[in-house]
Image 1 (cartoon, one colour):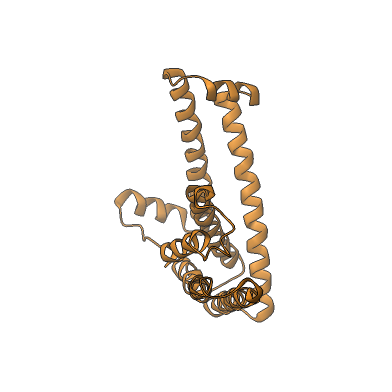
Image 2 (cartoon, one colour):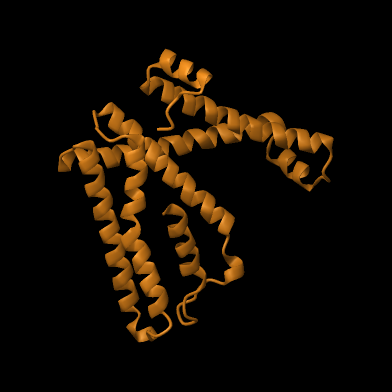
Length: 219
């Protein structure tokens, strides 16, 4: 469902009627959009799971993963409807497209809210607090990740001027080594921080034994 939603989103951005097609196809950065979409989605799912674990929520990681997928269906339908309408609706009737998109977005947000409230067995106020804390955790995680990214780049590639010079240099063993070590450092930090959080919220000795024997649950 997530892949289908993203595919429809890209189609919506690039294939509307010429009156409403404000972005050139060649200007759409699909790789950047896909990375941003799936990174933000992963952060929301993981952070909400961590928040619910702290606040005695009943939802599992799998349930939290599924809720946004189904909640996005109204917005997906709205984008498909607008895509079709954009070829027949005049510019003076553009409010129709805005109305359809607004209703789809509002419907999706309501479904997301109700889904989280149901799986965690929260009250209305507890659900609001859970979502607010999830967003705060996402901001903190993004800041921490940015700090580590900058530190790893400076460690292996030097300051900004040195990185610019490195990017302009032809590919060689030294450049490949620095680039590879930078990305390996990012991967190591991600695995360490993610693993530390998982071990914190699970029985660490049991989980370690399950990982070593290959019997650890997927979710």
